[in-house]
Every structure is written in structure tokens, then in C-alpha cells.
Image (cartoon, rainbow, N blue to C red; front, side):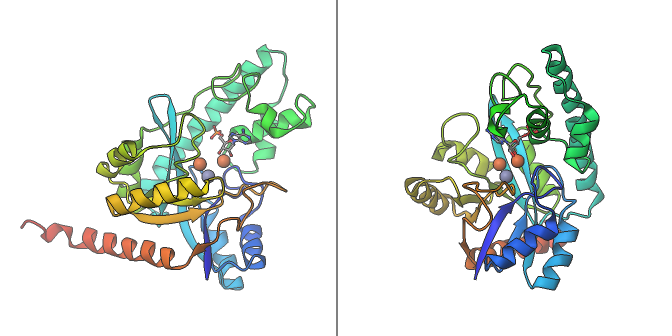
Length: 290
Ligand code: AMP
Ligand code: FE
Ligand code: FE
Ligand code: ZN
């Protein structure tokens, strides 16, 4: 039995609906998948319903982008209390900040003579979540670029690029804290593949562990064999959980398509035990120290 614990859907910047993701997981012979959209849990309910039909276990999750100085660090949260108002209020704030930021990026593009309408970007987004990939698709549609990756350069909306606008981001400790407070198990996403800067090293990961980090996404579609063994060693040093996932966004012929990481199911069991332990501690907490 195998799992893919890092998947995006149309609820954030993925191309496939949650139901399509579940069907694809079935076709790939996976037993379990985690839906880990950026800043949104809106894809989870549909995936769970579809999972029941196909006998695919759907693990609720989320991915937060945090900012440490100038560097982006992504934190996955598994088993958040995804229906809780505390989590939903925080996510609503992120989604609104994203919408305002998208408008600002379109204004910057406009000043450069690159015209893309807000309305079209919203249509492409299909949900209230607007990310740079949706703007990139509009740029492609209007013939400004020849492929999506071109949008993510200095010329357009690459980080620090001419029309880039930073969006609201927590720092890693705040992100981990938010996940812990909403019942989630915080796991460091793709430490060897940061969009900005070199791979994360032991000391930096140690400081996240102090903040409450509980696991590392050791098995990642773009991690090298050396990186996998390096992060496995850090897992042992800090007694962390191991996870793995493709980070599939549903793009055709992509290197990180669904199921490119097949995580043995024993790691899902360990994650589940951690959630149960965490829940038990929260329930029992009032007694501690009294
Ligand atoms: P945002 O969260 O709106 O800043 O957009 C970040 C998202 O853009 C990531 O989650 C990826 O899905 C996508 N992305 C980032 N860099 C690239 C790239 N070079 N090519 C294609 N997609 C990218
Ligand atoms: Fe993404
Ligand atoms: Fe990520
Ligand atoms: Zn991701």
C-alpha cells in the first residue's frame, strides 16, 4: 500500500478537481492521498466523498508558505481541524490578501503595457483562491508568454520580478503555531527544493523543531538520492515523522505528476498515531499540572 501526501487541486492552484485527483490516484494504484492545497481546505470534502466511492483514503491537509527573512519555507499541516472556525477565519484572511495582491500585480503589469483583466484571472481561478499560476495562464492565453514558467521570471511575476507583489505571509514559527493551534501536524515541505535559496540544513531545521515542527517531507519528487538520505538522517536526529509526496499540480507531462512519489503506508500510520496522540493531549490538557 502506497500514498502520495502532497497534492494540489482547483481549490488552490492545481489543474484537477478533487474528484479528478481521487480518480487519478485510483488509476495509479495508490491507497491513500493527502489534499494539501495552499491556504485552502475547500477541496477536502469533495475528495473524501469521492474517496469513499473509490476506496481511496483521503487525508486532510494544507500547505502554508512562510517567510524567513527573504526566504520562502513551506509548511504542510496534516489532519487540521479543517471545519473549525479558527482555521477558516485565518484562511479567509489569506485568501482575501491574495485577491488584493493579484489586483496589484495586474496593475503593475498594466503599467508595463501588459493587459490582463481581473475578471479573466478570476474565471481561470475557478474559486476564490487566486495565485500567480492563474495570472500566468492568462498571460499565456493573451500571447505574452509561450510557456507558464516564463511568467515566473524577472520580466513578469517571478519573485522580485517587475510586476511581482509579495503577499501576506507568516514567519515559519507563526505558521507552525497556527497549524498546531488548528489541530494539524506541521511538516516541513520539500526542504531540498526551496524556491529561494539553498537546501535547508540541520541547524535551520532544528530551530523549526523548537517551534513545534513534527516531520519532514523526505520523499519529494525533486529530491535527489543524497538529499533523501540527508533528510532521513535529520529525521532520526530530531525524532521526526517522515512524509512524502509529489506536489502534483495536475500539469500534463510534469516531473511531479501524481504518484511520482509512492510513500509506504507505514508512514501514514505513524502520522495518524501522532494525530491521535495530539488529540488525546489536548483533551487531557486541563488535568496536566493540576
Ligand atoms: P503564489 O502562491 O500566488 O505566489 O504562487 C506560487 C505558486 O506558483 C506555486 O505554488 C507554484 O504552484 C507556482 N510556481 C512557482 N514557481 C513556478 C515556476 N517557475 N513555474 C511554474 N509554476 C510555478
Ligand atoms: Fe502551487
Ligand atoms: Fe510548496
Ligand atoms: Zn505544494
